[in-house]
Image (cartoon, rainbow, N blue to C red; front, side, top):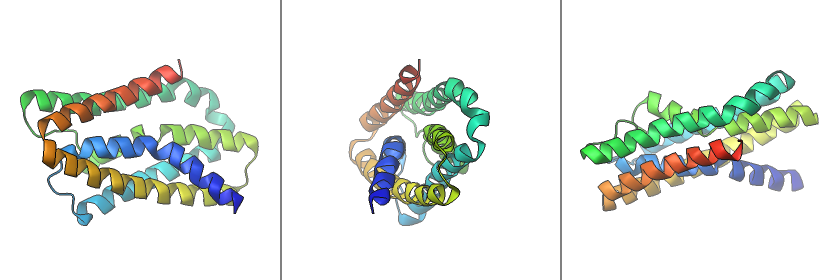
Length: 186
């Protein structure tokens, strides 16, 4: 039972940025139906858990690479998404970088999952078994899925209610998350 609590806490810490990105990016969504939300949450969950497990599989091979480039990659992806949202708010148009389209969904999912890859590498170096990692990956998928659903539903509501100011705020928050990732590792 203790492993489950630890896995949930790990998942919550890894997917906090997934929640923030899904909420901020969803302020432009007019359609927050389950048919739109479920596939996005599924992709975020698969990418998050997949990169976590991939990090574990590659372990030692990528430890130097991940440690140096992960913050820069995460920052650049979030700067791209957040900057696009700010530009759209400035131009008073629908964001071109919201969670519409598989390309934008994948950019958001990868940007928020690079840290999961790094954590997977660290678990590999600690010698965690494949069975333990698979269970942690499943918990990570489930928690990420639920947080993205909550983020999208909440972000869409805020966007419908507050419109352009919500877009400004969402874009700014994404850029600040990216800066936090960058400066945390410098």
